[in-house]
Every structure is written in C-alpha cells, then in structure tokens.
Image 1 (cartoon, rainbow, N blue to C red):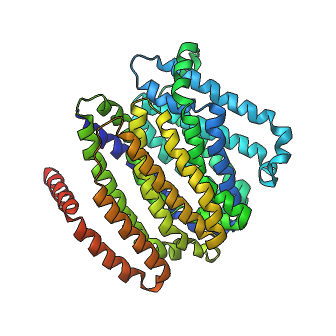
Image 2 (spheres, helix red, strand yellow; image 1 turned 180 degrees about the vertical axis):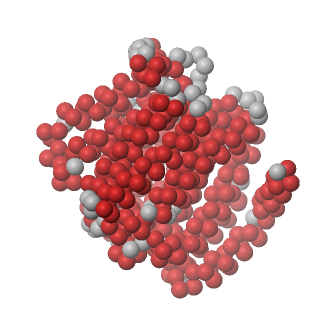
Image 3 (cartoon, rainbow, N blue to C red; image 1 turned 90 degrees about the vertical axis):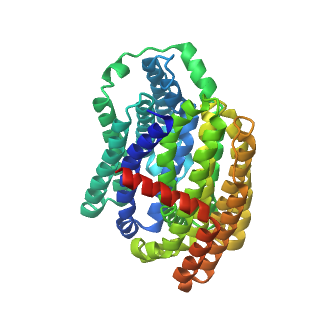
Length: 467
C-alpha cells in the first residue's frame, strides 16, 4: 500500500472516531450551558487545563515517546509499554503525596482534589494506551475506543446532570469513568494483557525514550501556556465566570481543531515513513499545501456560522461567547498549521527544535494577554491567542527548512490571512449583516484561490467516478 493510501486510510479511521465523538459532545453544549453555571463551567475548564499541564511534567512526557518507539521495529514493544506505565503511576503517587498540601492550591482544587487525581490518572493512562495502540498499528481499535469514550461520557452526563442534578461533580465523574471505559476496551480488544503483565524494565530503552521525550517537556509546557494561559489571565483579571464563557467559545473553533487533529494522528504515522524517502521535501510540500488550503477554507466556513451556532447551542448566559469565536478560529488555523510542522520535527527525532518556536508563542501570549485583556476585556485574550499562534507557525516555518526542503506558498497564506482577519472584524462590528458580509468574502476567497478549488473539484469528480 502506498504512503498516500496509508495516510488516507488512517485519516478515514481517525475521522470516524474523532469526528463522531466531537459531534456528539458538541451537540450536548445546550445541556451543559443550561445545567452548569458559568462559574461551574469555569471550574471544569480549570481542572481539565491543569491536568494538561501536570501530565507532561509528572510523566516526563514519556507517553509521547511511546508511539515513536513502538513504531520502531528494532524496539521491544512490551518494554516500551512497561517504561511508560512506570512513569504514569509514578505521577499518580506524587499527586497522592501532595494531598495534605492541596489546601494551598485554591478552593477549586482543594474541594475536588481526589477527583483531580482520578482525572489525571485516567487521562494519562488513556493517552498512553492510545499512543501504544497506534504504535502497534491497531488503528481500528483506536478509532472505536474514541467513540466508546464519548458514548460513555454522554450517557453518564445525561444521567448525573439531568436525573441526579450533580452538576460539577457529575460532570467530573462522567469524564473519569469514560476514560477508564476506553482504557479497558483498548486492553481487551487489543489483547494487551500479556503486554501489561510481561513487565520488564530496560534502563537502556528508558534512557533512549527520555532522551526523546524530555526535550518535549518545555515544548509541551510552553504549548500549554499558549493554549491555556489566556483563561488564567481571565480568571485573575475578570473572574472565573467569564473564563467559563470563554471556555464555551473555544468549543466552536474545536470543529477545525478536531478535523486537523484527525489528520495529524494519521500524519504522525505516515510522516515517519515519508521522512525516510529521498524526495521527502516534495511529498511534504504537496501534502502541506492542501492542508493549509483546507484550514483556511474551514476557517471561513466556521466564522460564517459562528453567530447562528451561538444562538442554537448557547444558553442566554453564554450567548456573548460567539463574539470570541472569530479570532479564536484564526488562532485555530495557525495552530493546526504549526501542528502539521511539529510532526516533521518528531519524525526527525529533533523534538528540541520545537521548543524555541513554542517559547516565542508562550512569552508573547503572556505579555499580550495582560495588555489586551486590560484594554479590550475578555475578547482581548482571543486576540492575544491569535497573534501567539501566528508567531509559533512563523517560527516553525523558518526552523523546518533546516530539516527538509519544504516549500510554503506564502503569497496564498498572506492573502488568505488578511482576508480572514478583515472578515473577522466586519462580522464582529456589523453582526446584523453577517450573512451578507460572509457571502461577499466567500466570493473573494474563491476568486483569488480558484486554482485550488478547480483542483479540489477535479479530485472529487475522479473519486466519485471511481466509486
């Protein structure tokens, strides 16, 4: 099977899993925004974001090394899994040891400390077994577990939130149990009992994995700052209830993030084999051009429907969240484009190169969040995030040329970015004419990028004829 066909097949599998899961979760927003107050939603988001921060620190990011080393035929997969499990459970033990000190971490963490530990442990183990499953090329099992996790979370949320009115506690319990249901399915369906119980530690392998993963820790932490620091600034400068509204606004750009993450999961596997080819620059360039064309197209589409989705999905208390969506969508476009480039660095086993680009975005995000929130209130955080992701992408574009001969169509990207920013500003300030403005901008976007649309149309026609 060719590398392109493998990429297409893997993308299709991950699409079934992730897109179905995200759609179900997305459609539940009316329930969440009607049952949970803005303050409770802010607390949920705070706990989830903190899990994302402590996860790479406590595991030394070794879970991220699991897929790369499991894909390497020269390594023993059982020992790869054993090494990663050791660090995941080590992280859980550290959190348990910190229990007496949880009173100093704020009311939200102190009151939900054991929930937080269970959330961390479930999240870390699910990430580990998901990566290991993909590293063993059991992609169908990986796809099914994503849907299973969502179905469990939805069912439990409906029961605990609507029937038992458990609110914040119910949401957290549903999330935790859905993680463990997913883990159990991967272990049983993937027949991984022997892999788990055949526990052997190879300290040479651990050193190699840590050499790969430890340079990623600063990158992942810095990436967390880019992703999440805006919410902490909002909590400190405006209030946790506004953070809850802002967290809901992030759900709409998640449509784009979900689509690109589906591709990147497949791309993470294919990128390794493409990197080993002599003409890897040509192949990377071809795939990347289609990738960023589709990112910008999706950005225009999501911004066009942002306000109608806000009316449809958000309770009255959350309705203002739609105004934060357009700049966050632009941020998602550049985040996705930067994420694509990250896989090339990972394939080259040069993860330390990612650090400098992410630090640029993190530092800029920290400065701009303070200045913009002070000046523009909550929407200032969205502007700061947008600019930060743009700079991360620029930095990675410069760095990637030292690894592969990747040619980027900067003229297309500049034109599309300017068009998307102007579109964003106009629909925010003239929201009553959003549909008219969006139609005009779609015509302009299609006209200046007609070559891409013609190629896409021809590809779809050929695909349909073959079917």
